[in-house]
Length: 193
Image (cartoon, rainbow, N blue to C red; front, side):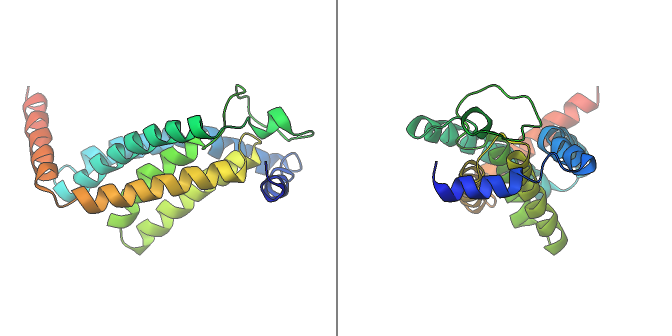
């Protein structure tokens, strides 16, 4: 690891273990916001039932995650390093994690890939919420001692690039319109039973 990566890691991770409330928030954000995100997406899918454009964005978010995660696994084959808690002394490790390749951060890939299409579609309040939610998750992974900043930055950048390409390439495409129409037709059939 580079010295800068280690220094930034230490500056964030050294904040852990000093305040119970901050530790609890870091653990909660790092481990459990994934469930909040899943609940949000499911809720939005049904709440925005009449909004085909918003549903397209939700589908594009899922597609972005799939593509970004596949690419992240490929990147992990090209470059790998173990988590900071497995390598560095005196890391404040607040959550249990199996020792393996931490590059890039899967949690960061997940959040940035799901939220990038939503960011591109949303108004200013939605953009701020999407960006800071994803950023907070990335920082929390450093705070709890399971990722280096380079893991988070690589995961975030990869997901953002994939999200932009997929959103720009598919949002207005005929295939997306057909896919949403097909899903809505199928859903109507299933819900009318």
